[in-house]
Image 1 (cartoon, chains in turn green, yellow):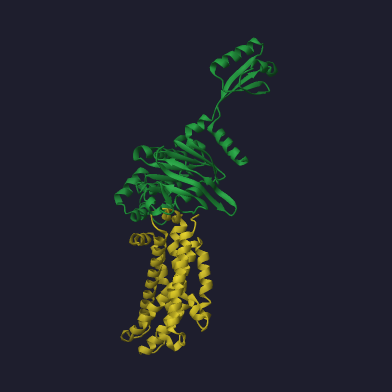
Image 2: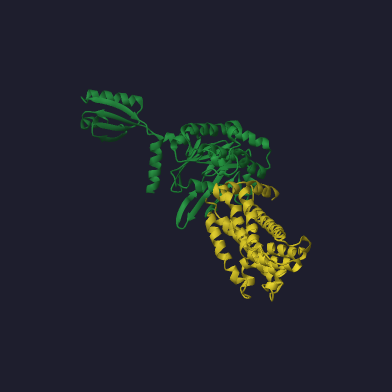
Length: 303
Length: 246
């Protein structure tokens, strides 16, 4: 396994009796784009704030680059850039001045400000008051701030919230380029599966504070085993003919089978036709990631 | 720490802060102006007594609250805390820098008060030759030291409360009783908001007003020193432990 850039062990945050984050074991490897997926209120932001040392865990621990946070936060945060929830900005300062505040604290040259402004394409608007920026520009300013210190880990909390489609596309391309062009590990949270699907290499699904799934996004997709649905005129006659096959259900006007190998499909159809059953339609239905996500979170809600 | 201070200066809403620092003392002096006050050193002292009472009783403590709120305002407004505190800076550095800037501004306000007072009195006819430097100097310094504990209290409150108005309302509520507290020998020395007027009148030339007479200066300084330590450490510990949720 690659080096774990982020590792939480039994991370828990309780407010009163309610566990907002519940025994989370988060593993983010170097070079990954880790999609942290969950509905609004699932505990994503609280988790991210604990990663940054902004909120103190009720129990459990956080390690960034193998160092405990918040104990060694000062040493570690130099290597981390973050955009936590809505972008932070000083409204009365220009975009450039906002970045200069951070650059001063990190002891970075003015040149670096120009670089990140160029990366997020804010160079032309750098002199305008940040308070007058559109939401998309504020969001990009926040990402520029996260990138300023040339971090090894970038944490972006809902970076495309409130952006228009063009803006979303742009940010997504930017995030995808980070590991490739800058060797940055990215932890990006979202409540939109489609978004995570389009950029993440790994995914963690959080629901009601619990981590329901964690692993490569392809593993999540592999859960989407297909169903084969065969529409027939007389299911009652068709049913015995499908003997031995992984039958799931016989519903009104159709047989539903677990995925079929091509040979089985051909034999079944030929048996049905031979048995005098009219076959109207054979279709394979793959579950979408959306359905898997809903199923996961549905399970989570029941558990 | 130096970098943090530089950053604080960069973030400050200078037009607003400048206005407050200049306008506060100015209004206090104008309201406390004592026309027809004769001439000579005694007239200066009398006028200074009038001016400090208004200023140190009311305006200076209020100024401490307003400036504390202004120092924290940029962070509260745009979600600055979470960005700032996620950077490799310690929370005590952040808090300490804000306190330094706050007390620096309060020192400037006192100097402005002194300057405006002199100019105003000269404008109404007092002679520059008779300016009571030796009394004004210690008085202005004493007032600044005496305001430190309540500055620390106000920073504590302002760093926790997002609402500018709430912090200010508390400040006003605590400042107004200072007028009565300062007159009480029992409560006066213990009440942070009464310290500036006690210190400024006690050290300064307004002993004629009798405000701080009968009070041991040592007690006053112990109370001020102790109050400052408690408020500063309390605020710092609260700030260091708090969850940043805004």
